[in-house]
Image (cartoon, rainbow, N blue to C red; front, top):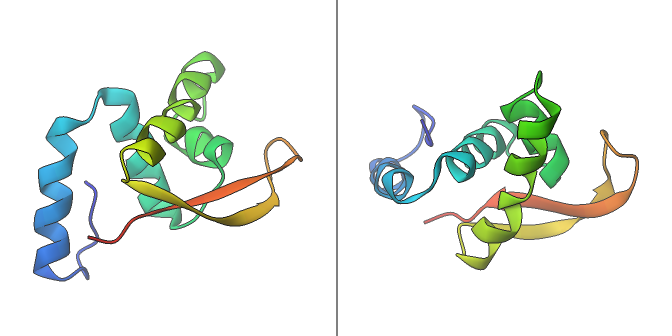
Length: 95
């Protein structure tokens, strides 16, 4: 699910429209990012698949795809809680 129950109806409809057009790994990344609200790519990927490092890396790489499609945006930088490196922070673009 890509929306919260508190979202306005227009946001719910937009989220439901996006999901079928995304691949599985993009869906996993976006669902995790939505739950976290803002996160680094690695934080979102770890939330999406915490017990599978190989799959986590595949999901993490989808951040650039979603950014390129305008579905997520960079909102700043911070030290990643997973890698310890200074990296971009993402959030979903409000539609």
